[in-house]
Image (tube, rainbow, N blue to C red):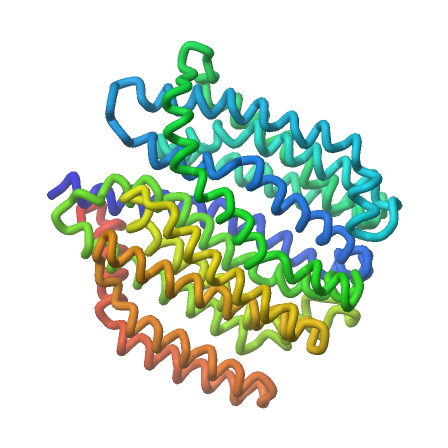
Length: 480
């Protein structure tokens, strides 16, 4: 029993450390948002975000879904060197894949012309493509660190890189004033930093004798359905930027990007949890009480994320007004939908492990494709007329469809009662309240917030008791 419970502690410790290691630096970066918005016009930010959106599809396409295969095959104990073979095989593969974006730099002019109808942003494209190559080369080292549960070192890298990003952004945006290139150049430099830090902290290097062609074929067969999934994920989460760019210009994309930046804190929590959850999920799936563990983790994560999203959504007008220049104020209207969309993304990630356990990645493709197609159709219908608000709402709907389909497939493959009805009702109720009350007096909204939080503490008292008990036992250094 002690061994089983230590898995929960390792998961929670890993998640908490990653959150703490990131939240302080992210907070600094967030508090500097007024500085950024004062020096970058919505148009400049729109150009930067449009290029980032392009690399946002290029990177996962080049990864070929092999990052998911890494974790899926890493824990298959067919032989005692399986972990080394996975690391060596994919480490060498990612090295050669990283050469592709370097070659693409030769075509930066036509790429800029296609996206912006001008080759003015050729330099920005080249810098971004170099960043993609660096991310590919560092990926096997970061995966190795995660799956060996070295969350302390993973957090150290996050702290160093986040701090570097803040400093570089300040220098490039406010001192050197290099406009559209600022944020892209910062990201590429941090990508180089990631690569060097991971190589230093992971003493192993991919070796030729570890390269296994048969294993690579198996992993590729597993990852093959994930390649169109990557495209569908991009359609679901990022394609609306290009539809906005086409119909409403780069200024609209810049405003939308500010809305996206307000989900930073939520993403810190989500990324930390999903990073730590992989090892925990695979390590617990054969335990007798695995379903109970998954149930409680899903509920704790969902409630915490909904609390953050409801709070930010309810007071989005005030937050955006304080944190940005006047030119960006109208972006407050999309913050709510973007926050709740990320909650659905986190929920679907957790429940999707039923699919991953059975290596039925085709179901993941069907789930994300359903959400992406609904999102794309709604985007094409409503964005031309309604712009930003339509883009945010249709993305939320797409995530909702993806979550529902993922849950249905996962339940068939690995039944686990997550308490979805209670969480779903809470999601809908808090979302509708934030819609209805957003234009009300601030003090009225504060009162509504107090009532809603109090009511949630009652209906989720089992979760509240679990958290309190864990904290008490953790502080007392006892096993839960």
